[in-house]
Length: 163
Image (cartoon, rainbow, N blue to C red; front, side, top):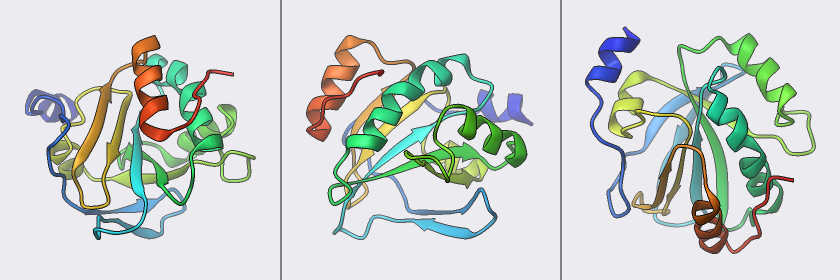
């Protein structure tokens, strides 16, 4: 199934593209809707998979965003395919310091494959900033380099570091 899904994935999202609202569930099994009502904070979306070594290297930067992003301006959400093992996912989040009981918890939404397709999530890690009206403002595919860190810092008005 995963191979068939990956073969059919289009190229990655680009700034200026509109993305749809979607339904998923929390890692505790509660339904959640990610929508873009035209008001409120922008969404910062982190798409990852626990076995991805590049995601593991990306998480210190994402943790920095979690710790410093203005919650009035940005809602930070992790996205994971609903097929992932939730027990392993919870262990992974604990190990990287982003579990629900950690000082820097990451809200994680399990998303169905149709969302993976519509959001063109063909690689991990992916970082998206989506306006409150559903337009992609920034899209980064893969592990960040210094230019990406600088661009993300500027876009969110915070200093992002791996420490």
